[in-house]
View 1 (cartoon, rainbow, N blue to C red):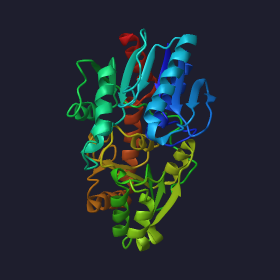
View 2 (view 1 turned 60 degrees about the horizontal axis):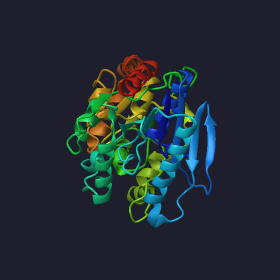
View 3 (view 1 turned 180 degrees about the vertical axis):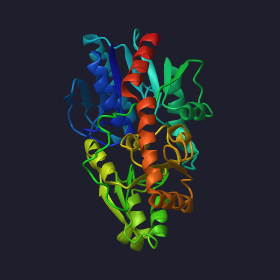
Length: 376
């Protein structure tokens, strides 16, 4: 089969859960003897083509006009899909929620939307209304899909509150975890009081509440350090979320928080290995990759109790669940982890066993390939 993904995210250029999934998944699909092409819009003036371990990545030129970028981008995508299809027929085109809105369907190709978390999905957790254009585009995209893949029970059910699947097939297939890359690092000794967070530095990832929790615990644990890995996020007015945090929690951040910025994806396991506890108090996720990745390394993990949290962690067995809106609850769970070494070590071992079963790369690959063949 020839699978074509439409996405601007990929670890070569940008960090993010969708890009990390695409790299792990696409490389595995290629190893099974199938072909994968990823088409996205880049930041360069010309088209760039790269081979990533057999995965063909095409980055189209950035739009010339910011006012007509939607029209220009979709025009380039449609042209490139048609060109590639004429040379090497495509079986399946897959996109995130909004990705099919202006795609022209070609007979013989099946079109799939994978629910990574769209505009409607995150509206409630971000406490915002639906933007008329983005909402319209997402609805239009859903009408064009031949089938849907949900990465968790929660994202399937929550998305259905806002959007119709139009009586098309919907299957649940989790994100896979590369348990070879994310495996225990026995040679790396965790640093005492090292608390690690990875993800975009923005409100919906719960980083503000986590910082408040760490500041609350500083008196009890003077050596406590929160290590933050990830990219900054910008408000609509262009202001940096990271700078807002530094202004709001100046003294607390100075004593207890270290921002490391973006690091290559393959360096993330080493950072998890150095941690005593990994904490990801997201306000909302579709599934989330960081929690099961850290769990696969036998790390003690605190994850959100909201959304798909209970699908990912069994509380006090494979990790702890917290209320991401309450710094006091995050602090309480973090205090428990730091005070109960034997129990948290047992949780880590249970967590890896759970991840190896539920997020097994080869099993999930089997499900995806079978699904693609079924809808053809």
